[in-house]
Amino acid sequence: RQAGGVTQRDPRFSVVSDSDLQFFESVLGDTGGVVTDPHELAPFNKDWMGKYEGAARVALKPKTREQAAAVLRHCNERRLARGVGLVPALSLLQGGNTGLVGGSVPVYDEVVLSTAAMNQVLAFDAVSGALTAQAGCILENLDSHVAEHGYCMPLDLGAKGSCHIGGNVATNAGGLRLLRYGSLHGSVLGVEAVLADGTVLDLLTTLRKDNTGYDLKQLFIGSEGTLGLITAVAIHCPPRPSAVNVCYLAVPSFEAAQQVFVAAKQQLGEVLSAFEFLDRESLLITLRHLPGAKDPLPSCQARRTARRGPLSRAAPLYVLVETSGSSAAHDGEKLGGFLEGVMAAGLVLDGVLAQDGGQARAMWHLREGITEGLRHRGAIYKYDVSLPIGAMYRLVEDMREADWPPIRVAGYGHLGDGNLHLNVSAPAYSEELRQQIEPFVYEWTAQHRGSVSAEHGLGLMKAGCIGYSKPAAAVAVMRQVKAALDPRGILNPYKVLPLPAE
Ligand code: FAD
Ligand code: MLT
Ligand code: ZN
Image 1 (cartoon, rainbow, N blue to C red):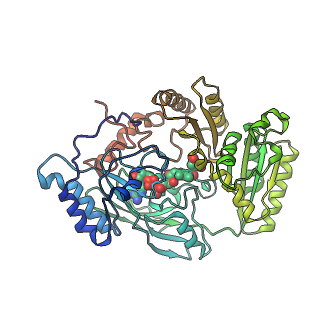
Image 2: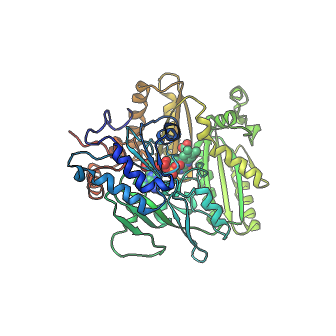
Image 3: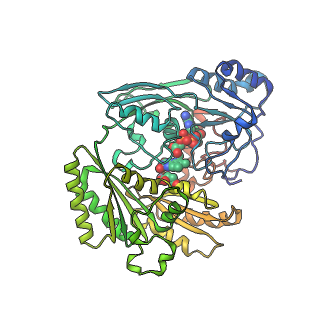
């Protein structure tokens, strides 16, 4: 198994019994919230990439925090009730199951607790922009909901049509607009969570300012289901921009891309809302595998055969720049000045400005679709690292130079945030290849004082890797927090933190 030392099922956990199932039926049966049919269970056991698969016998879909609390209390207390040293482990928790690090599916036979049925918007304050919603609301649906009031969600990501807001908060998802609206640690106003013992922690305020004691909600943001079940979230929504422009530029090098970023910050200022990049390999993946994807700059020869063409036109990298504001004329003027400047300075080989919403969406589709396109390329080894921007692309280049079995390396990501998505594809998964790639990528990242998880989390995949980015003393404090909130370790076992040393 590809986890921090997880080689066998933890024997302290019991197997779900018929009496457990009867209890779950008594709490959730009326609302159809107990799933045991193997066909219906299958999607709960498999992750989005098709890389991780568990063997849960049951998935539970509470509709309310009270139902969730009853289920958690039962699992936590069974040890006392039965006088045996075993508790059923919960794969806590599953939202939209779009996570990319194996965090959302069981490792063995843990009970899956899903927020799929907790999908109600609870309130929206059209003056402050504070949205309160149950954890299972789909991100895109929430964005449509607040759009009716002239607001937007402060985060956006390729999985918006399936991921849940609870899952977004649990992973502290970054995404495409972090550059503009910051991380969820800033925009989440309140959280309601149920702890392992069934205690409901109601921190669901919508206040912008609240310095009464420790800010406990922050613990749940990025906790990846290991500290409690997030049942509802309050989040600050910014005004929906009425003028949005997108341009797509081919650049001769990563060095040039960085200079274009600096120019964008200086000249676009407050209207700059995204600065993304993809390399030619990534572009080829979307063009090849995404139905309807078109190269916006065919002059820059994204086709593989183009390598034989004139070098000056074969762009190795592309950047996508977005502005969002309230005045089309003002933003257009700024963007025009920026584009003229970067062209005149020779930082850009060619570029295209979307002329309407359709063209803008097509450009975003190219960038957001890389993840889906990669699924058609065989086995994918996915790395999501934060690095000083100047070092980011060297990791991709160094990987390409490595003398390993046939691999292909694609680099893309959130350049403005210093977040590289490094994806290695090979014909099939091989433990031998993984053992070559991973120390290399993680050690490289640590040497540059980067983070081995920028935004996807640690999950199962990187449960043993936290030490590359955090000192032992910090990991020890994390273990204490985990022990305080989930003393029996029933929440998302085997994930996030490494197994304690023998
Ligand atoms: P799941 O996948 O179901 O769960 C993820 C983790 O959170 C698990 O550890 C789970 O136990 C825990 N969890 C889920 N819900 C709760 C809850 N209510 N309470 C407690 N714990 C919970 N991530 C980014 O950061 N930026 C991106 O740009 C981005 N783009 C993506 C694009 C695609 C096409 C895909 C497939 C994924 C992408 N992701 C991205 C990864 C993923 O982190 C996000 O999709 C999302 O935040 C996960 O939400 P989810 O509801 O699917 O959670
Ligand atoms: C992205 O930025 O596209 C997502 O984080 C998903 C990925 O890394 O593929
Ligand atoms: Zn990303």
